[in-house]
Image (cartoon, rainbow, N blue to C red; front, side, top):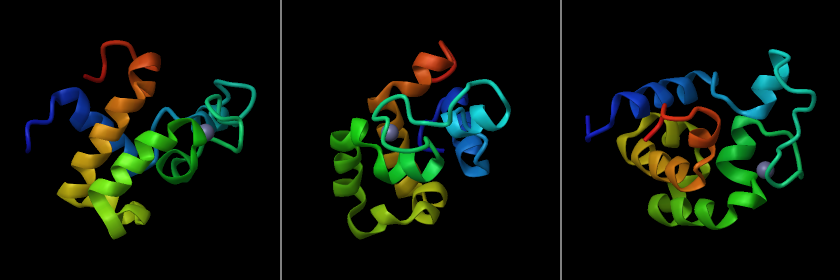
Length: 107
Ligand SMILES: [Zn+2]
């Protein structure tokens, strides 16, 4: 569907399940000492933080907000609608965060 690579498709499934390599989750499974967001240090790096709050990705988030307009505040929309998912993949690509921690896994 819409030209997602295998890696992007599997990333999307992980995001939908909440089992993504965000710091809060890594902390939960004892992979890191603190759940604090390493990018902005203004809160725990939860899914909500990553999708809506992170100041480190403010300009990237703004772009996603412009793409999705009023739907941008709905995690449900972002994770479950084709428009939202496409925009989310572009956002994730712009942050380069998941590429950094899972080398070669996400295009
Ligand atoms: Zn942050």
